[in-house]
Image 1: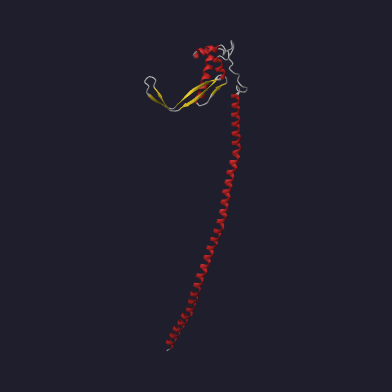
Image 2: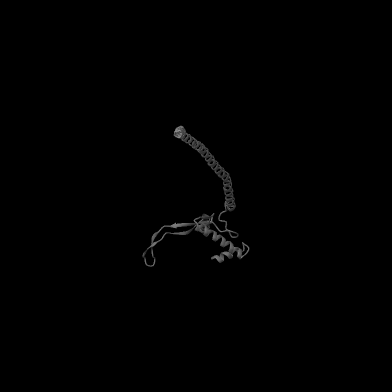
Length: 217
């Protein structure tokens, strides 16, 4: 039986050949994609499809008998389930009409897809909630850091302010002391000049006395 015959065999049950072809394509595509990605596809009572890795080895060419090195590769493998084996071996008989029920699916297995979606949705909501909780904590940490920086800046400014004030006070004091020292130095000089002034007056008086005596003679 090929794929076209398989589609014809299930066309009546799926409501037409197109629906049957779409169903077969969807099932085969899902199996192939899962096996290629490394997943194991297991159908209870029917069998399982899986990917098997084969290491590098030496083999012989059947035509020439030459030894050939075979590279490492991966191959798909199908293992038949026990119910399938029993039907093929003849230990169990095929039903005359209806579908072959190899084994009933366990409860909850047919709704696994919905359960997985629900679990994924729960995980997504949990991640969002965690992100929302973490956001205020980050903001609070940022605020604390900024306030700490401001406090340190104020402290450094307060420490620098007294030093600046002391420097300002020291400079006027130095200026006043320098003025006082210059005033002290200039004061004796002025006194000396004041003392010399009477001597000049005395010499002037002597010269006038000499002139008057000269005239009288």
